[in-house]
Amino acid sequence: MGKKEKQIMRLLSKPKDFTFAELSSLLKALGYTKDNKGKTSGSRVAFINLTTSCVIRLDKPHPSNELKAYLINYVINNLKENGDI
Image 1 (cartoon, rainbow, N blue to C red):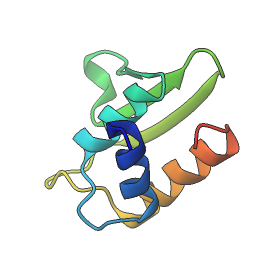
Image 2: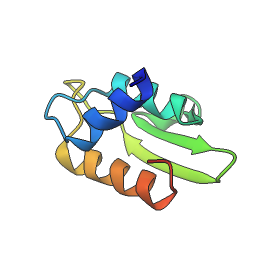
Image 3: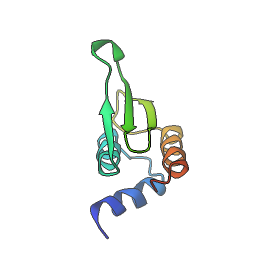
């Protein structure tokens, strides 16, 4: 099992300590690019897959780096709907 598959399995297990950096790495491996619209975007980030035109928008978690459960569910649902996982 490769790194990408391990990351997918970890995401699907919905851990409470899944970090934004782990999500960024996984989405990059799935073909998404991170888009931050200039200085005024704040913590809002979009991950865009140019081949499928899928966009996943979310706020970077703060002050901690761990994603909330609702964000993990949101990402999983989007990835399943687009056939990425």
